[in-house]
Length: 184
Image (tube, rainbow, N blue to C red; front, side, top):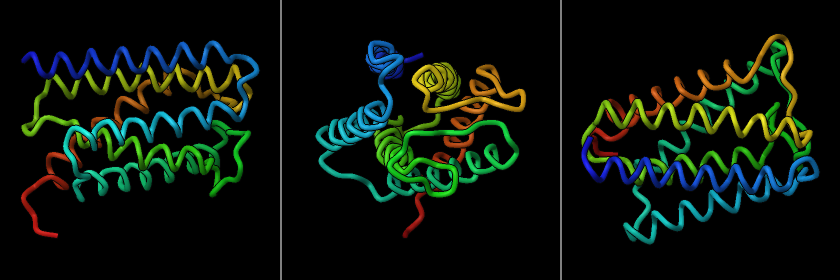
């Protein structure tokens, strides 16, 4: 795996571990402030990548919107099927906290801005694994803070694989559809 790819993965491990430590420090009394921390981190990530590139490519925003729509359908389906509930939001759109929707647009756009120009299978596996692990860990911390409840047999292992496969879908959407040299 090339050095720039390894550095991007290491950067994610450090950032996500720091987020996990902050969440853990607030547990079990973090409550709604955890949503605000997530939004702040999403704004920071987008600003960081904007500062490096001095632009927000339209295609990166499209990926953020794709992730938002995908997540909206997935979260509402899980809620209807009785697999989880979320709590503590300012307001919900369907079953999705508005704060999570904002984070998804910001984070999905920032994520697209840091992807390598060419598809890299090792990067796909590493990123999908990282997002699977830290996504499941994040949900566990939301549960400890009373912002989420698993039901109907759903657990952290299923959460890991749902994030893992979501990121594979995002990679396919980015490299096979969105980032093709289409004119918009």
